[in-house]
Length: 558
Image 1: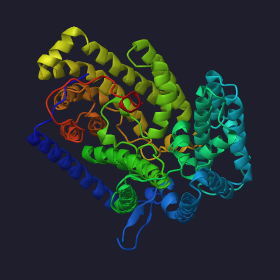
Image 2: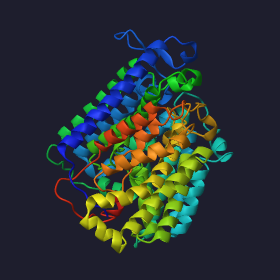
Image 3: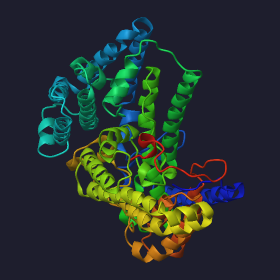
Image 4: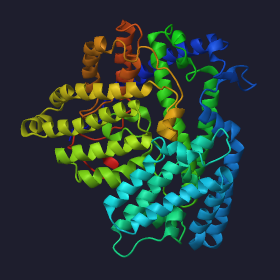
């Protein structure tokens, strides 16, 4: 549903200018605040000496980033380089057995890094879910898989299993829960695919080859078993034209992103500043807006680099891994609010599409989204913030379908075809509710600005960092409601007739004001909402009708 057309170049240019000015102006405030707080006592734990070339301290508050690219950088490079080397030798000599080599190397890497006890825990869960797969009953696979996943997410079972792994190093908890939880998702995929197989089931050897593929083992992404098995079993290994060139380009981009982030942290202390409420209370509205936006973008960059590195290695192994996460400034509907596309594809294939079918029936869609977000809540780790986030996103996804159904009624459908501009005004009325639902869900998520370890790295609930939210994230939102809604109308008219949420992030950022409804906040909403429209994907050509679901897996993400 929806009519799309190309926006005029001068309009796009105006949006580009507006967003550039807004980012530069807010960034200047963050830079000044970072410079003035470099030697602040409250920030000693997060701000430490950086590169000698810059003569400045560096924001090192994110322990995952520091461990990946500083403390354990050499070990990670060594392990992944060994995988690439042995995999390449095997692909050139005995390509039919390359999956076995991947499995053996992965088992040895897990054994060397985490120990024999951890390996036994992983193998025991694999054996349990393989035994369940022999029954070829889908409901039993779901029950057993979710129970295994809950054993790593719910106390006291989580601590009980973690207690078997002795020794301690900084990355141990991240590797333990990351590898364990991704193992359960892979085993569930294997069990469900085996249940659908008409002739027998796959062997446990196939499961081990699938699970112990090292690049995906600890941090993902998740490839469904059917895709992995088909690709890794191919004996004729051929590359497309310029594929190696693209791999090299992406590898250089990831290295460049790592260096750029480290340089950025020398001048902008976006991770440490939110930890001191007294200090953030003195920041301007524009600085708070930029601070929140930088933290959101940094989360995306971190996920993009993490998945990008593993995806690059998978492409060297002649696999087609899930795409990297979509930039947050490109998200404008609830159907695409996902970081990990591997988990998203898994949920769509085995839960959302399975229950929702063609997603035309409102009741089936409601059941599908509730089930999907219930599993997502378990995957992220049950806690109050995740509950609120799941409920709001579940409602928003259903609300999109309700509005689509409403505007497919004959009077509105004819109005959209006859008058594109008039149809925009009608859709604005429904977008307000959806916008505030998304705004509140992201506001809750922003209360932990620079630590989303539970979401991305599966840490236990009791290990979550104690980080206070930015002041004013909720304070004053109701007073800004009339102003923000009117600005939403203006921004929505710029979004080429889609049922869209393009102005989401600017609204979130520019309403984080401890001084409630100051004029700069409202002005920031306006400038930001116009600017972010510029980043949307648009299609050339004249107006046309768009089907509600072009592709269920790719067109309607969770």
